[in-house]
Amino acid sequence: MPATDNQGSFLNRISIRRNQVVYEHEVEDLEQFQRHVTDRLAELFHLPGEDAAASSDPPEVLLSIAWFRKLLDAFLCCEAEFKAVVIMGRDAANFAKSPLDRLIPEHLDRTIKALDICNAITHGIDLLIHWQKLAMIAVDSLQARPIIEGNVERAKKALNTLLSSITTDDKENHHHKASKDLETIGNLKSLSYPFAKSWSASKQIQAMSSNLAAPRGGEPTGLVVPVYLMSSVLVFVMWVMVAAIPCQERTGLGAHLQIPKQFSWAHPMNGVQEKIAEDWKKKEKKGRSGLLEETKRLEELGQNLVEFAEDFKFPVEEEKAEEVAAWVVELGEICRKMEDGLMPLQMQVRELFLRMVRSKGEALDVLDQFNKVVTPIPYN
Image 1 (tube, rainbow, N blue to C red):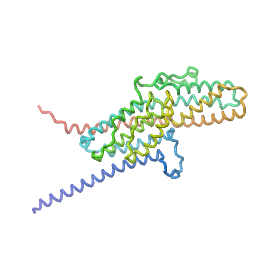
Image 2: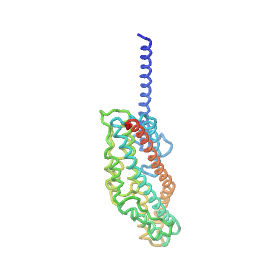
Image 3: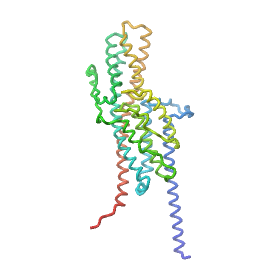
Image 4: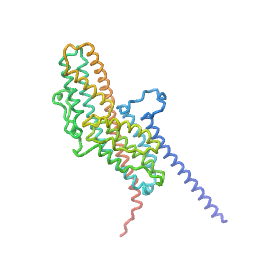
């Protein structure tokens, strides 16, 4: 056999081996990405049977502000790894093959819809900050000793404004304004939703999840599952945020998310979804504040203190004074958690918004490069 034939055969074998090494490395990266997502979600959702003693820090209460800050940190890490493994540096021709030619544009469309939800969440956090200020007025008023009628009346006005805002119908929240009784206290601003009356956070989630279907057994592996994974996590995070933080129109939210159970990373999401869906059904009433842990307690304690204020008589019995003092202490602790956590949480939501804008642009650049290659050049 001629030497040139031997050389060609040898070079072909080297090329095949190199391609095989590249492919194996790529598969390892994609599998590692899925493992990282699973680990981050499992850590957040504290699956039953996990060893809680493994960590020296107490776990955050599910749906608390601290928990949401960890959730967004985890999502931002997943999003960065997804972009590095799936999008950047990859031959754009990969995205022209079925079903990626459909899945990538659908993922980008969900990203665009998620930007609206981020705006709604940012506004909802503004509303929570105002609730915290109202609750803090009550705390400051009721901490004074002895408890006198003037302070009780001031606390009552603040708490009635707070509870009125919480129980306002979601569709009417875009008309909500701070009480005139409190305009001179903190100069509270109007809280108008920046959306049309027809906009619905619930329908936005439904639109994001309507065509989110798990890969079928016959579909090729590779990039399909990671893209489906990232879309599922994106929809899930937006769904949980809307369930917890005040947003415009959330009727029927509990029924808008279906996550298949065959993937390991879906297990922790299904666990927390079941809990949220159950809690949501219990609170499926107009204008509820959502499932954020701090605001649930804010509402409960506010109602207790308003009832006390309505029946107030001076002097207060010692036993009742102790009970009220305990409520005020707890309300003060919640206010401090909200004060410490809400602004950083809002900054994370804004970072998420900007990150998604950048990632969408980078993905479109990759697709545009492919379109330039496959588009025929017109000749005159």
